[in-house]
Image 1 (cartoon, rainbow, N blue to C red):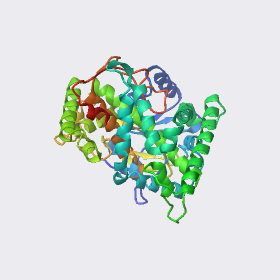
Image 2: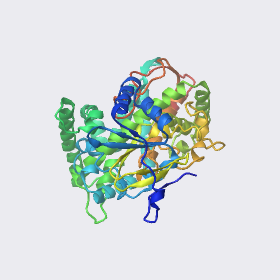
Image 3: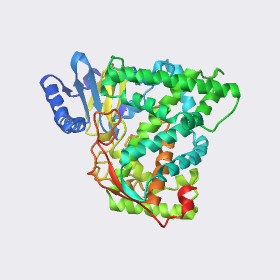
Image 4: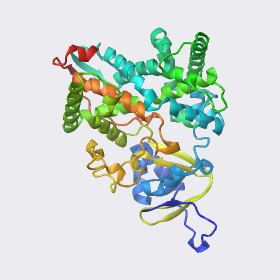
Length: 477
């Protein structure tokens, strides 16, 4: 198998690998024109077909981005220590979204401590208590649908996920007393995230001014909730309480600003990326009669087996639904590109046997949508086929752990909220598939590349009809 490695002092000069093929000058202008005409995905696929698994694009002012495509060249990208490859200052744009007390607004040591707290708070043993409030929000929301009609699936999913997030992450104070106000403020922060924000997060444009004002008001509101809980000594079963109770390794508690920033981080990741995945999952399932039949049959079997009672263990039995979600994410990852900074040079060896030297200082880009679609790993990679993850096939295990990177590649680069995301998406789609006959009415959507998270472009219209044979206690209890 091809490998990724660092050069050592014993390497012979005559064996020195070459630099990757370079796109610059006139070729760069052609690339930008193709991006404008065909979109980023088509442009990168074109370069991959022409230049191979490793190539560098030289942008203006000397900025060089080296693309690494395929699991054969990704080992060092994911496994290298932070001293050699890290996110660097590439995520500086998140600071005005979440505050300067968390994430990329603090030093590496504090950030690692906060990550440890995140991971502890999102352990499966802690998540079990979230199933019941999630179910309650989902059932209450969809009980307001008529017996039949047409809805914009993207809008409906975003609404119910905001309710779930308010209940499970923010707590009853926000959910029961100030939900509408908080939702409005949070949307201002969401609307302040664009590709312009990624590269110029502090320029004084109207969207950024609204974002900054909204974050200030949210911070004030959540800080007061934290102070009130600490004064009262009461406890709640939500993420806010887990963060209030958490401590750094030196024994100090988190400040109100730190808790607010971490809650905002979780809210953004848990709501926005889950809305993306839930909507694409629905569009994919409803576009495949075979998949829809299989996943509905699984729901009928499981719901009847447990007489409508759903808990964390029941969700784990929904293998068909799980694979449908996973396959939707393979084709439509929420983050189209994983980006890092090289602090030391290293070498990669491609599947074709070409060895390249990647210089220190290069930005590294791993296009997830291409890595998830390698034809020597996945059969008919452009086809939506959840069965490829079944025990009989396990196509994602055929190469390495980097054959499927929709959740970041594992380890320190993995998504700590993966279990939480699957849980709330399964709860939503289990309820919809069991209670409604659904049909996709609009054409299959295209990704919206103007957004930071690649949601479907435009409305995703779905017709629904409530199933009359479903016992009432399974719908509303």
